[in-house]
Amino acid sequence: METILKDKRIVLGVTGGIAAYKAADLASKLTQAGAVVKTIMSKNATHFVGPLTFKALTGQPVVTDLFASGSDGSIQHVSLAEEADLVVVAPATANILAKAAHGIADDALSTTLLAAQGPIVMVPAMNNHMWDNPATQANLQTLQERGVNILAPEVGRLACGSEQAVGRFPKTETILEYLKDFFATADILAGKTIIVTAGGTHEPIDAVRFIGNRSSGKMGYAIAGRAKACGAEVILISGPTNLRAPAGVRLIEVETALEMRQAVIDNLPGSAALIMAAAVADFRAASKTNGKIKKERMGDSITLELNPDILQEVAGHKDRGVIIGFAAESENIITHATSKLERKRLDLVVANDIGRSDAGFGSDFNLAVLIDHDGPQGELTMYRKSDLASEIIDWLARALGSDLHS
Image (cartoon, rainbow, N blue to C red; front, top):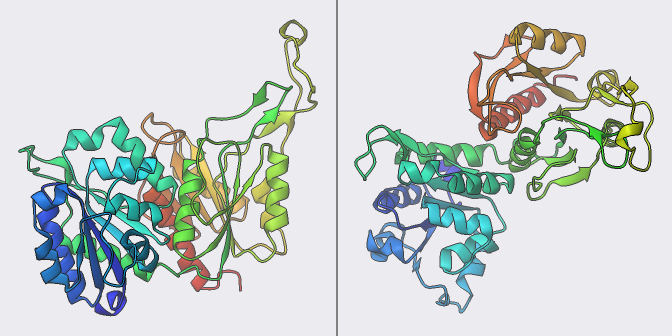
Protein backbone atom coordinates (compact mmCIF):
# COMPACT_ATOMS: atom_id res chain seq x y z
CA MET A 1 0.00 0.00 0.00
CA GLU A 2 2.83 2.34 0.82
CA THR A 3 4.04 2.19 -2.78
CA ILE A 4 0.62 2.96 -4.23
CA LEU A 5 -0.22 5.82 -1.86
CA LYS A 6 3.26 7.31 -1.51
CA ASP A 7 3.34 10.97 -2.54
CA LYS A 8 -0.30 10.94 -3.60
CA ARG A 9 -1.88 14.32 -2.90
CA ILE A 10 -5.17 13.66 -1.16
CA VAL A 11 -7.65 16.27 -0.04
CA LEU A 12 -9.67 14.83 2.84
CA GLY A 13 -13.06 16.45 3.35
CA VAL A 14 -14.60 15.90 6.78
CA THR A 15 -18.24 16.75 7.39
CA GLY A 16 -20.42 17.00 10.47
CA GLY A 17 -21.45 13.47 11.33
CA ILE A 18 -20.65 11.43 14.42
CA ALA A 19 -18.17 9.46 12.30
CA ALA A 20 -16.01 12.58 11.91
CA TYR A 21 -13.77 11.38 14.73
CA LYS A 22 -13.06 8.21 12.72
CA ALA A 23 -11.72 10.33 9.88
CA ALA A 24 -8.79 11.19 12.12
CA ASP A 25 -7.65 7.56 11.98
CA LEU A 26 -8.04 7.59 8.20
CA ALA A 27 -5.94 10.76 7.95
CA SER A 28 -3.27 9.18 10.15
CA LYS A 29 -3.13 5.92 8.16
CA LEU A 30 -2.98 7.74 4.83
CA THR A 31 -0.12 9.89 6.10
CA GLN A 32 1.72 6.83 7.40
CA ALA A 33 1.33 5.27 3.95
CA GLY A 34 3.20 8.22 2.43
CA ALA A 35 0.31 10.31 1.15
CA VAL A 36 0.25 14.09 1.50
CA VAL A 37 -3.09 14.72 3.20
CA LYS A 38 -4.66 18.16 3.32
CA THR A 39 -7.88 18.37 5.31
CA ILE A 40 -10.91 20.56 4.73
CA MET A 41 -13.49 20.55 7.52
CA SER A 42 -17.05 21.78 7.43
CA LYS A 43 -18.11 24.03 10.29
CA ASN A 44 -20.27 21.25 11.73
CA ALA A 45 -17.39 18.77 11.61
CA THR A 46 -15.45 20.95 14.06
CA HIS A 47 -18.14 20.27 16.67
CA PHE A 48 -17.11 16.61 16.68
CA VAL A 49 -13.32 16.87 16.37
CA GLY A 50 -10.92 19.82 16.34
CA PRO A 51 -8.85 20.98 13.36
CA LEU A 52 -5.71 20.71 15.50
CA THR A 53 -6.15 16.93 15.56
CA PHE A 54 -5.88 16.66 11.78
CA LYS A 55 -3.02 19.16 11.65
CA ALA A 56 -1.06 17.10 14.16
CA LEU A 57 -1.77 13.81 12.37
CA THR A 58 -1.00 15.00 8.84
CA GLY A 59 1.57 17.73 9.39
CA GLN A 60 -0.47 19.91 7.05
CA PRO A 61 -2.65 22.98 7.69
CA VAL A 62 -6.39 22.42 7.95
CA VAL A 63 -8.91 24.54 6.04
CA THR A 64 -12.15 25.51 7.76
CA ASP A 65 -12.80 28.97 6.33
CA LEU A 66 -13.82 29.59 2.73
CA PHE A 67 -12.22 33.02 2.75
CA ALA A 68 -8.88 32.08 4.30
CA SER A 69 -5.85 32.35 1.99
CA GLY A 70 -2.98 29.90 1.80
CA SER A 71 0.46 30.77 3.13
CA ASP A 72 1.42 31.77 -0.42
CA GLY A 73 -1.68 33.92 -0.85
CA SER A 74 -3.47 31.35 -2.99
CA ILE A 75 -7.22 30.87 -3.00
CA GLN A 76 -7.34 27.57 -1.16
CA HIS A 77 -10.50 26.02 -2.56
CA VAL A 78 -9.05 26.55 -6.04
CA SER A 79 -5.46 25.53 -5.35
CA LEU A 80 -6.42 22.43 -3.39
CA ALA A 81 -8.90 21.38 -6.08
CA GLU A 82 -6.27 21.74 -8.79
CA GLU A 83 -3.39 19.99 -7.04
CA ALA A 84 -5.28 17.01 -5.62
CA ASP A 85 -4.76 13.54 -7.08
CA LEU A 86 -7.95 12.62 -5.28
CA VAL A 87 -10.61 14.29 -3.12
CA VAL A 88 -12.04 11.99 -0.45
CA VAL A 89 -15.04 13.08 1.60
CA ALA A 90 -15.22 10.89 4.70
CA PRO A 91 -17.62 10.93 6.32
CA ALA A 92 -19.97 12.36 3.71
CA THR A 93 -23.25 13.48 5.28
CA ALA A 94 -26.55 13.62 3.45
CA ASN A 95 -26.07 17.40 3.42
CA ILE A 96 -22.77 17.37 1.50
CA LEU A 97 -24.16 14.79 -0.94
CA ALA A 98 -27.08 17.14 -1.63
CA LYS A 99 -24.80 20.16 -2.02
CA ALA A 100 -22.46 18.35 -4.40
CA ALA A 101 -25.32 16.92 -6.46
CA HIS A 102 -26.90 20.36 -6.93
CA GLY A 103 -23.73 22.44 -7.29
CA ILE A 104 -24.16 24.38 -4.07
CA ALA A 105 -20.91 26.01 -2.96
CA ASP A 106 -21.34 27.84 0.35
CA ASP A 107 -18.33 26.71 2.38
CA ALA A 108 -14.73 25.64 1.85
CA LEU A 109 -15.48 21.96 1.20
CA SER A 110 -18.48 22.31 -1.10
CA THR A 111 -16.64 24.99 -3.09
CA THR A 112 -13.59 22.77 -3.44
CA LEU A 113 -15.77 19.92 -4.68
CA LEU A 114 -17.28 22.19 -7.31
CA ALA A 115 -13.81 23.28 -8.47
CA ALA A 116 -12.23 19.80 -8.36
CA GLN A 117 -10.67 18.69 -11.64
CA GLY A 118 -9.68 15.19 -10.57
CA PRO A 119 -11.55 12.18 -9.19
CA ILE A 120 -13.78 12.34 -6.11
CA VAL A 121 -14.63 9.56 -3.66
CA MET A 122 -17.56 9.99 -1.27
CA VAL A 123 -17.81 7.78 1.84
CA PRO A 124 -21.35 8.36 3.14
CA ALA A 125 -22.31 7.73 6.76
CA MET A 126 -25.67 8.65 8.26
CA ASN A 127 -28.85 7.42 9.89
CA ASN A 128 -30.42 4.57 7.90
CA HIS A 129 -33.64 6.50 7.27
CA MET A 130 -31.64 9.41 5.86
CA TRP A 131 -29.72 6.98 3.65
CA ASP A 132 -32.92 5.35 2.38
CA ASN A 133 -34.68 8.66 1.76
CA PRO A 134 -35.49 9.06 -1.97
CA ALA A 135 -33.81 12.48 -2.02
CA THR A 136 -30.51 11.00 -0.80
CA GLN A 137 -30.72 8.11 -3.24
CA ALA A 138 -31.46 10.51 -6.10
CA ASN A 139 -28.46 12.64 -5.11
CA LEU A 140 -26.24 9.56 -5.04
CA GLN A 141 -27.44 8.59 -8.50
CA THR A 142 -26.76 12.08 -9.83
CA LEU A 143 -23.24 12.05 -8.42
CA GLN A 144 -22.48 8.61 -9.82
CA GLU A 145 -23.74 9.65 -13.26
CA ARG A 146 -21.22 12.52 -13.12
CA GLY A 147 -18.39 10.14 -12.31
CA VAL A 148 -18.20 10.57 -8.53
CA ASN A 149 -17.17 7.34 -6.81
CA ILE A 150 -19.31 6.16 -3.89
CA LEU A 151 -18.03 3.79 -1.21
CA ALA A 152 -21.33 2.66 0.28
CA PRO A 153 -21.85 2.61 4.05
CA GLU A 154 -21.82 -0.66 5.95
CA VAL A 155 -24.57 -2.41 7.88
CA GLY A 156 -24.12 -2.29 11.65
CA ARG A 157 -25.07 -0.52 14.82
CA LEU A 158 -25.60 3.21 14.31
CA ALA A 159 -25.00 6.07 16.74
CA CYS A 160 -28.77 6.59 16.97
CA GLY A 161 -29.06 3.09 18.45
CA SER A 162 -30.43 1.31 15.39
CA GLU A 163 -29.14 -2.25 15.24
CA GLN A 164 -27.99 -3.83 11.97
CA ALA A 165 -29.00 -0.89 9.80
CA VAL A 166 -27.30 0.56 6.72
CA GLY A 167 -25.44 3.83 7.26
CA ARG A 168 -22.39 2.87 9.32
CA PHE A 169 -19.05 4.45 8.39
CA PRO A 170 -16.75 1.79 6.88
CA LYS A 171 -13.70 0.59 8.80
CA THR A 172 -10.47 2.47 8.10
CA GLU A 173 -8.98 -0.67 6.57
CA THR A 174 -11.93 -0.95 4.17
CA ILE A 175 -11.48 2.63 3.01
CA LEU A 176 -7.72 2.20 2.61
CA GLU A 177 -8.20 -0.94 0.51
CA TYR A 178 -10.74 0.91 -1.63
CA LEU A 179 -8.33 3.80 -2.20
CA LYS A 180 -5.49 1.38 -2.91
CA ASP A 181 -7.63 -0.33 -5.54
CA PHE A 182 -8.71 3.06 -6.90
CA PHE A 183 -5.15 4.15 -7.59
CA ALA A 184 -4.12 0.68 -8.78
CA THR A 185 -6.86 0.65 -11.44
CA ALA A 186 -6.66 4.32 -12.41
CA ASP A 187 -4.68 3.57 -15.58
CA ILE A 188 -5.44 -0.09 -16.35
CA LEU A 189 -7.17 0.99 -19.58
CA ALA A 190 -4.82 3.86 -20.41
CA GLY A 191 -4.29 4.18 -24.14
CA LYS A 192 -7.37 2.09 -24.94
CA THR A 193 -10.46 3.35 -26.74
CA ILE A 194 -13.64 1.75 -25.47
CA ILE A 195 -17.01 2.09 -27.21
CA VAL A 196 -20.06 1.81 -24.94
CA THR A 197 -23.63 1.84 -26.18
CA ALA A 198 -26.43 2.75 -23.79
CA GLY A 199 -30.15 3.39 -23.54
CA GLY A 200 -32.89 2.18 -25.81
CA THR A 201 -33.60 3.18 -29.40
CA HIS A 202 -36.73 4.95 -30.63
CA GLU A 203 -38.05 3.76 -33.97
CA PRO A 204 -40.44 6.40 -35.37
CA ILE A 205 -43.89 5.48 -36.63
CA ASP A 206 -44.81 9.07 -37.33
CA ALA A 207 -43.84 12.49 -35.96
CA VAL A 208 -45.13 11.71 -32.44
CA ARG A 209 -45.15 7.92 -32.01
CA PHE A 210 -42.31 5.43 -31.84
CA ILE A 211 -41.48 1.83 -31.02
CA GLY A 212 -39.20 1.62 -27.99
CA ASN A 213 -38.44 -0.15 -24.74
CA ARG A 214 -37.98 0.55 -21.04
CA SER A 215 -34.20 0.96 -21.00
CA SER A 216 -33.07 3.88 -18.81
CA GLY A 217 -29.44 3.84 -19.94
CA LYS A 218 -28.17 3.62 -16.35
CA MET A 219 -26.10 0.49 -16.95
CA GLY A 220 -24.31 1.81 -20.02
CA TYR A 221 -23.62 5.18 -18.43
CA ALA A 222 -22.19 3.47 -15.35
CA ILE A 223 -19.90 1.38 -17.54
CA ALA A 224 -18.76 4.45 -19.47
CA GLY A 225 -17.96 6.27 -16.23
CA ARG A 226 -16.02 3.33 -14.81
CA ALA A 227 -14.04 2.85 -18.04
CA LYS A 228 -13.13 6.55 -18.02
CA ALA A 229 -12.04 6.31 -14.37
CA CYS A 230 -9.72 3.47 -15.40
CA GLY A 231 -7.95 5.65 -17.95
CA ALA A 232 -9.74 4.73 -21.17
CA GLU A 233 -10.80 7.05 -23.93
CA VAL A 234 -14.53 6.39 -23.92
CA ILE A 235 -17.00 6.87 -26.76
CA LEU A 236 -20.55 6.67 -25.40
CA ILE A 237 -23.15 6.06 -28.11
CA SER A 238 -26.47 6.71 -26.44
CA GLY A 239 -30.09 6.40 -27.36
CA PRO A 240 -32.54 8.86 -25.75
CA THR A 241 -32.13 9.05 -21.94
CA ASN A 242 -32.52 11.55 -19.13
CA LEU A 243 -28.93 11.00 -17.98
CA ARG A 244 -25.88 13.24 -18.04
CA ALA A 245 -22.79 11.72 -19.66
CA PRO A 246 -19.87 11.12 -17.26
CA ALA A 247 -17.19 13.81 -17.31
CA GLY A 248 -14.56 13.36 -19.99
CA VAL A 249 -16.58 10.90 -22.05
CA ARG A 250 -17.25 11.62 -25.73
CA LEU A 251 -21.03 11.43 -26.18
CA ILE A 252 -22.66 10.56 -29.51
CA GLU A 253 -26.44 10.87 -29.33
CA VAL A 254 -28.55 8.72 -31.63
CA GLU A 255 -32.22 7.87 -31.83
CA THR A 256 -32.70 4.80 -34.00
CA ALA A 257 -31.06 1.39 -34.36
CA LEU A 258 -29.77 2.33 -37.82
CA GLU A 259 -28.14 5.48 -36.40
CA MET A 260 -26.59 3.46 -33.56
CA ARG A 261 -25.27 0.87 -36.00
CA GLN A 262 -23.63 3.56 -38.13
CA ALA A 263 -22.06 5.26 -35.10
CA VAL A 264 -20.63 1.95 -33.90
CA ILE A 265 -19.21 1.06 -37.34
CA ASP A 266 -17.73 4.54 -37.80
CA ASN A 267 -15.88 4.39 -34.48
CA LEU A 268 -14.87 0.73 -34.50
CA PRO A 269 -11.46 1.12 -36.20
CA GLY A 270 -8.79 1.52 -33.54
CA SER A 271 -11.08 0.67 -30.64
CA ALA A 272 -10.03 -1.98 -28.14
CA ALA A 273 -13.53 -3.04 -27.13
CA LEU A 274 -17.23 -2.60 -27.73
CA ILE A 275 -19.55 -2.94 -24.74
CA MET A 276 -23.06 -3.17 -26.13
CA ALA A 277 -25.24 -2.24 -23.16
CA ALA A 278 -27.93 -0.57 -25.28
CA ALA A 279 -31.35 -2.19 -25.61
CA VAL A 280 -31.75 -1.90 -29.37
CA ALA A 281 -35.30 -2.26 -30.65
CA ASP A 282 -35.65 -5.48 -32.67
CA PHE A 283 -38.10 -3.95 -35.14
CA ARG A 284 -38.81 -0.65 -36.84
CA ALA A 285 -41.80 0.57 -38.82
CA ALA A 286 -41.44 -0.34 -42.49
CA SER A 287 -42.42 3.21 -43.38
CA LYS A 288 -42.56 6.43 -41.43
CA THR A 289 -45.01 9.26 -41.91
CA ASN A 290 -43.49 12.72 -41.51
CA GLY A 291 -46.57 14.20 -39.91
CA LYS A 292 -48.91 12.78 -37.29
CA ILE A 293 -51.14 9.94 -38.42
CA LYS A 294 -54.69 10.53 -37.27
CA LYS A 295 -55.88 7.68 -35.04
CA GLU A 296 -58.83 6.87 -37.27
CA ARG A 297 -56.48 6.43 -40.25
CA MET A 298 -53.93 4.16 -38.57
CA GLY A 299 -55.75 0.92 -39.27
CA ASP A 300 -55.49 -2.29 -37.28
CA SER A 301 -51.81 -3.06 -37.85
CA ILE A 302 -48.39 -1.59 -38.54
CA THR A 303 -45.97 -3.29 -40.91
CA LEU A 304 -42.64 -3.92 -39.22
CA GLU A 305 -39.21 -4.92 -40.44
CA LEU A 306 -36.19 -6.26 -38.58
CA ASN A 307 -33.47 -3.93 -37.41
CA PRO A 308 -29.87 -4.98 -38.02
CA ASP A 309 -28.19 -7.13 -35.35
CA ILE A 310 -25.33 -4.80 -34.48
CA LEU A 311 -23.53 -7.28 -32.23
CA GLN A 312 -23.57 -10.08 -34.76
CA GLU A 313 -22.41 -7.79 -37.55
CA VAL A 314 -19.54 -6.34 -35.53
CA ALA A 315 -18.39 -9.81 -34.42
CA GLY A 316 -17.36 -10.56 -38.00
CA HIS A 317 -15.75 -7.16 -38.62
CA LYS A 318 -12.03 -7.08 -39.36
CA ASP A 319 -11.54 -4.16 -36.95
CA ARG A 320 -13.24 -5.85 -34.02
CA GLY A 321 -11.71 -5.84 -30.58
CA VAL A 322 -13.17 -7.44 -27.47
CA ILE A 323 -16.97 -7.59 -27.68
CA ILE A 324 -19.22 -7.63 -24.62
CA GLY A 325 -22.97 -8.04 -24.90
CA PHE A 326 -25.94 -8.22 -22.56
CA ALA A 327 -28.69 -10.82 -22.39
CA ALA A 328 -31.93 -9.75 -20.71
CA GLU A 329 -33.72 -12.98 -19.84
CA SER A 330 -36.70 -13.97 -17.72
CA GLU A 331 -36.20 -17.76 -17.70
CA ASN A 332 -33.37 -20.26 -18.22
CA ILE A 333 -31.04 -17.30 -17.72
CA ILE A 334 -27.68 -19.07 -17.95
CA THR A 335 -28.68 -21.35 -20.84
CA HIS A 336 -30.09 -18.57 -23.01
CA ALA A 337 -27.25 -16.17 -22.28
CA THR A 338 -24.60 -18.81 -23.02
CA SER A 339 -26.34 -19.55 -26.31
CA LYS A 340 -26.14 -15.84 -27.19
CA LEU A 341 -22.43 -15.78 -26.30
CA GLU A 342 -21.70 -18.62 -28.73
CA ARG A 343 -24.17 -17.69 -31.45
CA LYS A 344 -23.03 -14.09 -31.73
CA ARG A 345 -19.33 -14.85 -31.15
CA LEU A 346 -19.05 -12.58 -28.13
CA ASP A 347 -16.17 -12.60 -25.67
CA LEU A 348 -18.37 -11.93 -22.65
CA VAL A 349 -22.08 -11.78 -22.04
CA VAL A 350 -23.71 -10.20 -19.01
CA ALA A 351 -26.81 -12.21 -18.21
CA ASN A 352 -29.59 -10.19 -16.55
CA ASP A 353 -32.59 -11.72 -14.83
CA ILE A 354 -35.38 -9.26 -15.66
CA GLY A 355 -38.09 -11.37 -14.06
CA ARG A 356 -37.98 -9.36 -10.83
CA SER A 357 -39.49 -5.96 -10.14
CA ASP A 358 -36.52 -4.81 -8.02
CA ALA A 359 -33.90 -5.15 -10.76
CA GLY A 360 -33.36 -4.53 -14.46
CA PHE A 361 -34.92 -1.84 -16.62
CA GLY A 362 -35.23 1.50 -14.85
CA SER A 363 -33.78 0.16 -11.59
CA ASP A 364 -30.44 1.00 -9.97
CA PHE A 365 -29.80 -2.73 -9.62
CA ASN A 366 -29.23 -5.74 -11.88
CA LEU A 367 -29.52 -9.40 -10.93
CA ALA A 368 -26.68 -10.57 -13.13
CA VAL A 369 -23.79 -12.91 -13.79
CA LEU A 370 -20.84 -12.60 -16.18
CA ILE A 371 -20.40 -15.49 -18.63
CA ASP A 372 -17.37 -15.98 -20.83
CA HIS A 373 -16.02 -19.00 -22.71
CA ASP A 374 -14.94 -20.55 -19.41
CA GLY A 375 -18.56 -20.48 -18.26
CA PRO A 376 -20.41 -18.41 -15.65
CA GLN A 377 -18.07 -16.35 -13.45
CA GLY A 378 -20.01 -17.05 -10.27
CA GLU A 379 -23.72 -17.10 -9.46
CA LEU A 380 -26.53 -14.70 -10.27
CA THR A 381 -25.93 -11.80 -7.87
CA MET A 382 -27.83 -8.61 -7.09
CA TYR A 383 -25.49 -5.76 -8.06
CA ARG A 384 -25.85 -2.03 -7.85
CA LYS A 385 -25.26 -1.05 -11.47
CA SER A 386 -22.14 0.93 -10.58
CA ASP A 387 -20.69 -2.18 -8.93
CA LEU A 388 -21.58 -4.37 -11.90
CA ALA A 389 -19.86 -1.82 -14.14
CA SER A 390 -16.69 -2.30 -12.10
CA GLU A 391 -16.92 -6.08 -12.49
CA ILE A 392 -17.28 -5.74 -16.26
CA ILE A 393 -14.38 -3.31 -16.60
CA ASP A 394 -12.16 -5.48 -14.39
CA TRP A 395 -12.92 -8.46 -16.65
CA LEU A 396 -12.20 -6.35 -19.74
CA ALA A 397 -8.86 -5.16 -18.36
CA ARG A 398 -7.81 -8.77 -17.76
CA ALA A 399 -8.96 -9.78 -21.24
CA LEU A 400 -7.04 -6.96 -22.91
CA GLY A 401 -4.00 -7.78 -20.81
CA SER A 402 -4.10 -11.36 -22.08
CA ASP A 403 -4.33 -10.22 -25.73
CA LEU A 404 -7.58 -12.06 -26.30
CA HIS A 405 -7.59 -11.45 -30.04
CA SER A 406 -3.88 -11.28 -30.78
